[in-house]
Image 1 (spheres, rainbow, N blue to C red):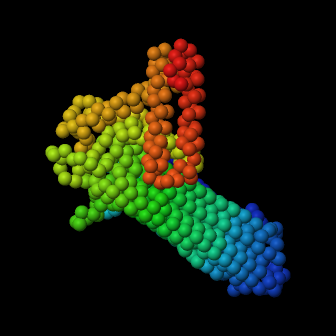
Image 2: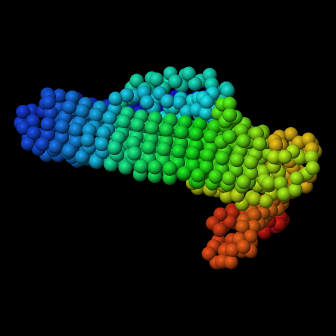
Length: 562
């Protein structure tokens, strides 16, 4: 369900910007004031439409042309070398050397210098656009609303949420009718050729941008260094930088599009990064990293927290008939370098899994959390060509460092305050997937395994997966009892042993990198901190010591977790 009450409350920051010039006692300029302004290089065809407050200092206004109605309150700052048309100005402001500012409101403490045209002549651009979420051909189309979060966009893009799309459009229309162009308090706008039909909220920055058209920048958002933003929303403290292109999209809170990154018809979740790559017709959830040249298209990925490696092509949405295919990645899914993922694919029930470097995966639905999809070094005779090898629970059995570090990383990197973001890895939903997958592995043979997709598993890996999932489930159960202070003596000892296993397994998985690197690169260890200086390992060991001490206090006879 869409929380319209929340959206309505947040939307008020877009419309409550009108300056009450009557309250500031603005009156038409007098004859003496006109003479002074003319002596300072100002021109106007109809001075009767120029209003000035008594607190304004005329010495701060020079070389300006005025057209239409312009109301000015300028106790401090300056207005110089700029043409104004139908504007409201509430100083103190600093305005210098702009070609023209038309139909805009400038709020206090803003700086607007060395720009070309800043213009408002329509409110329909950004508030009339849609994102083709999940399907490039528009079957999951979602209207752009400035304060949407990833969960709301995911709901509207789903079959159940389609019935609320029209209600969102009606809600948007009500806001659109009230919008006016303004530059918010403390905003900084400098060296831009064109800002058109855009709203810049408090402390937003547009500096040396290619252009900003039909867009909304919420508080603290910025467009800098050649970036182009069209018909889009940059949410709180988000950034488009270094020749990025953002079009018909929403950049989530504290997220970054940089280094020629392209975001089109998409929602990029909070605290995510898109650099160099291309994201088209996607919902990407929070805390997702795309730092290299890669492609993600037609993805419904509300859980986010994943990573897309260099050269990954997660974009086989075109069948040569229509580009109407799609993919559903799972939370925390990792697409390795140069992977090629064919559509349609559904990995939504495979959270925190890895698709290894260089793989081509076939269209499929795979339901194996914390798993590895990799190249088959030895393919059984009955396995079809093109199938990959699936190792169930590999992330838990062989790569626990990655899983636990991710959770630590999410909590430390999360900056969003307006957006509700889940940073826990072992949520109830994911633990339910683990339980269900364990039962499938126990009840089925490797030749008849549901949810395996276009992959195969070996008997050894089936058994190993069962054990990895069992420890995960039991660990979650014991942790819940520990938090609820309901562990009995036997369970306390079991948790001490499991805690020791987690610590050792995590360190062991990290040590693989050091040992392999040392075998191959002569000075590998010389230029790296030793494993015991790994920041996350230190955090983990301190955590284990703390919990072990508390468990031993709960049951002094148990001393196994050393």
